[in-house]
Image (cartoon, rainbow, N blue to C red; front, top):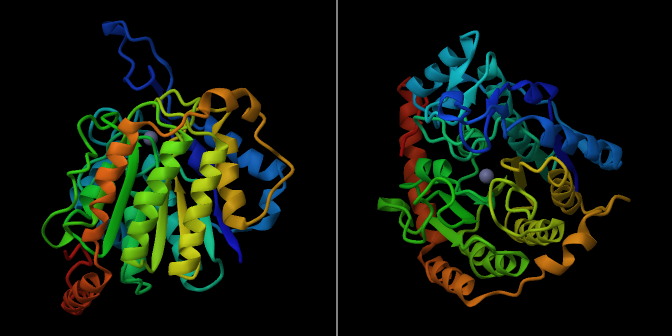
Length: 399
Ligand SMILES: [Zn+2]
């Protein structure tokens, strides 16, 4: 088993400027500017820990490339891609769409390099060079929809990777698991009517975006049943997340029988993160990754590709990612979580009834997933796509 690893120092050059936590800085309104909360530090320290711990030697380092226009347009509208490019060309940069997603000068190419990092991993998995992989990319992607950037995200890296796997490598069914503390709304919206891509998002209820990611958001048209949400109450910890994985995520994957599992690895549900109020530790990320690795082994020859998403604690994010990577590689380093004893007492929360209620509600929806039905839909979609390609039309979304 070989684990691929994508990182590029240009990811750290995406310039987000200033903010005041989750708000844009606005001195006239009394909001003091500080270093933007989505800054390179947590990612830089994560890469350094992967190196210093010795884990880097166990990984197959894969160079990212820039995603092409054709690849971006499988997911995004031409107007959105052009908007990012225009903002990026401006000397002072701009915003990707919602006023909360800075585009630095030159960030267009960096965002393409982030999306392309995932594409390189998908191709390496398809070619059999690696079994699984991790892309320590920046900017993040899971809030970006087809036509706008959102929540620090410019391009939806994982959605672009899912379409690449389907279109170029013939992987019909792709599952995207998202355990970032915030709802993977962009990924969900992109695939909402599509039964060939199962999206499962575990997030802090009603955090970001507001009023998004409820259990009743379950897909539309042919995609009904193929979007799952587990909106866990603030304060949820190890027991609640593991219960959600065992009752919802793993049974859903077993029913869907994906050809590839993608993971939106936001680690901002960790106990120290300033952007959410969940209680996860490195042990939780380790255990959740182990469950996904086992599911990938059982269902799709181990094919599991993780993209880095949120994670805003500069000192704890690196250990959470190291735990994920150790499970992907099946090895351990000499570095253990130095905060484990500090947090042990207050993160040992049992599963609470109000958490279990939400998980039960989501678990009831798992039976709507039908791998046999998606095979038929997939064949029909493949024929449609083939006709489009043959006609010389741009290779855009066909669903
Ligand atoms: Zn997040």
